[in-house]
Length: 78
Image (cartoon, rainbow, N blue to C red; front, side, top):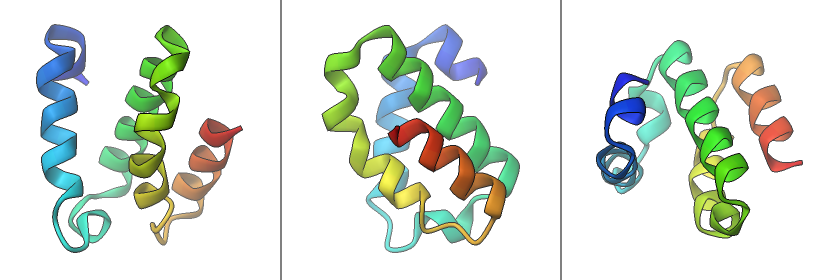
């Protein structure tokens, strides 16, 4: 979250790097996944035109086994 508030572009490029892995969700803890979803939600709220480019990241996060992460993904998609 700190990286997101300090340098959004670097935070987005870091996330894109994570999403290129085979199974990025299994490498992340629940708290980190929720922070990523919150960051994605804030990006979409600030600039709704980015929603289509950020949706693949949200769908990758939806592969989580955590019910709270799945709930937040669903709220972000809506």
